[in-house]
Length: 257
Image (cartoon, rainbow, N blue to C red; front, side, top):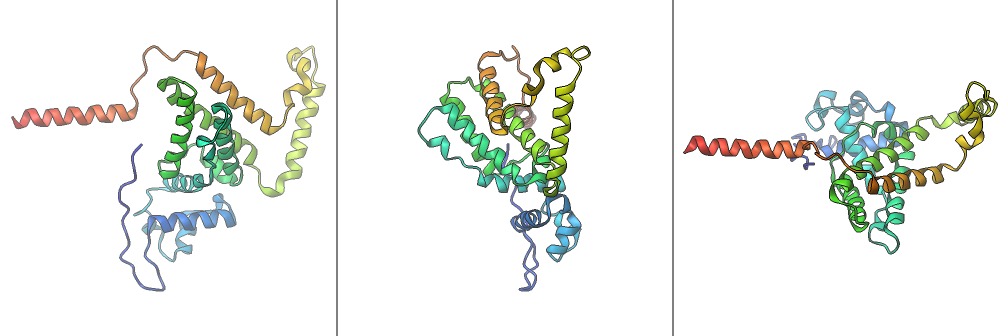
């Protein structure tokens, strides 16, 4: 994880047309997303809002994926990280932060979907990651287990938000109808052809969303404490890059001598 390089600044300084900046583009994207939904935010729409051409935006963000990652990082500033330094059992505090993260994604359905593949690397993401890792360290997890577990926890939270937030605000009635249809099928399934589904029946759909979310976090945490990691861990891209840089430096030194 590396900081974003120094962002270029536009030479456009006319009072009626403020200079373009990466920060300004992200802020405008957030405003548009809140007003119209992320799916309506295109480079063309964003350029129109900023009174510029779409090509100008690519000086500051390489593509929509990078823009979505930057927007996600901006909104992660709303995640409540105070449990990291509060009193109480470390696991409960960890779940509170993860629940806050999930709630932030719930508020922005399009972003919840995008977050499944976005790769944020900004200051708010790093603060979230640091808080989660600090609590896992407090809980006594080995470093390698903590490194993998934090990824699983965020994946589970993100997928949960994406699953429950993908419907448009006006689709409540349709969502309820779909849920009732599923409940009817599960309840009326034939025990001859699907004995295990019939045996569990309504229990397959039981529990509140919050209870299921919390239980899912607890299952992942408990599992990470007991399931062994592979005996040999493949190097991460960061390790590979560091090794490559060191090798290049050594090669340069040898040539120079």
